[in-house]
Image 1 (tube, rainbow, N blue to C red):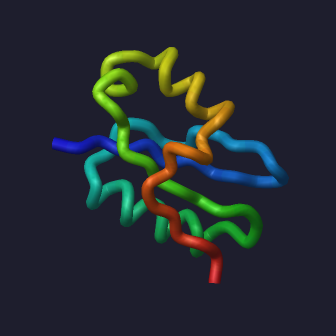
Image 2 (image 1 turned 90 degrees about the horizontal axis):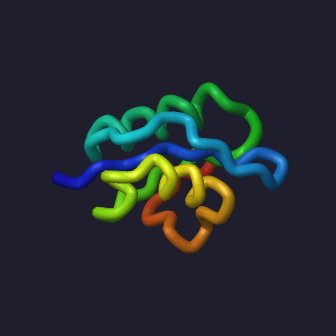
Length: 76
């Protein structure tokens, strides 16, 4: 079963918002967060096997996430 993290990009900074969700939870939360936020973009990305077992990998990812993002919804 795939797991996902939700990230937010605001003013060039990437922050981990919610970690380790299933795909439906991630998709629902991204849509809701984008509706509530009038700035930035909220993304979700699929965790790799390494990231599933290591918080250090997730923390490292938050500093350089762009290449690993697999899906994003933009503000409308």
